[in-house]
Picture 1 (cartoon, rainbow, N blue to C red):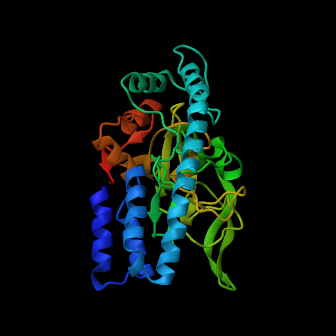
Picture 2: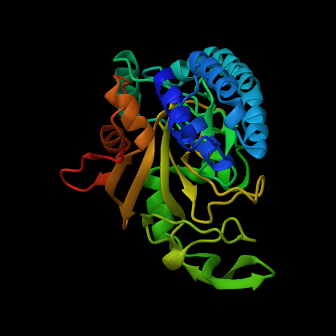
Picture 3: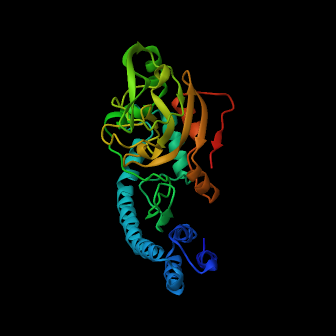
Length: 337
C-alpha cells in the first residue's frame, strides 16, 4: 500500500466526525505491510484526528502503534539468525549434491545421482533455497485470527516457525521416496486408524481403532481441529500423510503426518512450514497420491506471488521423476495463488 492509503482510511473513518475502535482495524489494515513511511503517516494522522477518536479507539490505536517498532526489530533479529545459518546450510547442501559421492538425505535415504543433477541445475540456474523462518521486514496488522494485532509475517510462508525434528516430524518419518511408499503399501502393519470423535468439555478428541493392514499409498487433504492422543495414528484406509508437502534443499520430499500433530507441540496443527525444521526449502505446496502414483502437485499461493515477481523455484515434477516416483501422465504444477 502507500501513505496515501493511510491518509484516505483516516479521512473516510472520520466522515461522521467520530472514529471508533472497529474503524481503527480498517485504518491499521489499510497500510498492508507497514513501512517506516506508513508508520510515520499513521502516527501523524492519529495526532491530526485525535479530537475525533473515541476513548477506546484512541487507546487501541496508541497501543498498536507502539508495537510496530518492536515487531520490526524482532523481524530483523530473526532474519539475522537466518542469514547466519544460511552459510552453514548452503555448504551442507553443496556437499550432499557432490556427484559420485555416497550421500544421504536428512531422512537417511541415499540421494540418487539424478536427484543431485536436478538440484544442482536448479540452484545454479538461480532457484532459491529459502528458510521458512525468514520474515518480511515490515509488520502487518492481522485481523484474521481473532483480535487484531501487529505481527511479523513470513516471507515464504505465512506460518513462519521452527519445528523440532522429533516424533512424527522426524525427517525419516515425513520423508517420501518410492521405496518407502512401496514398502508401506506392501507390508502388513498394526497401527491406529481414525474411527471418530468424543467430546471432553469444549474439546473434541479423536478416537481410534487398532488395525493390522497395509498402507494405501494415498495422500489427500486432511485437516482436523480435534486433538489426537496418538500422533502416529492414520486417517481412513491407512492414509499416513496429509497433502501438505515440501522439498528440502537436500532434494528430499516430505509430507506432514495424517494426524497433523507431533508430540513436541501437540497443540499445533502442522502445516508445510512445519516441515522446514531449520533446514532450507526449495518448494512447498500440496501433493496428492493414489496407490503410490503422484496425481497432483500444487504451488502454494505465497510462492506463486514470489514467482510472479521473478523468484525461481525447483521444478517439483522433474524432481519427483528423478526420485523414480510414478506420476500421472502430463502432470504439471498447479498454481494455487
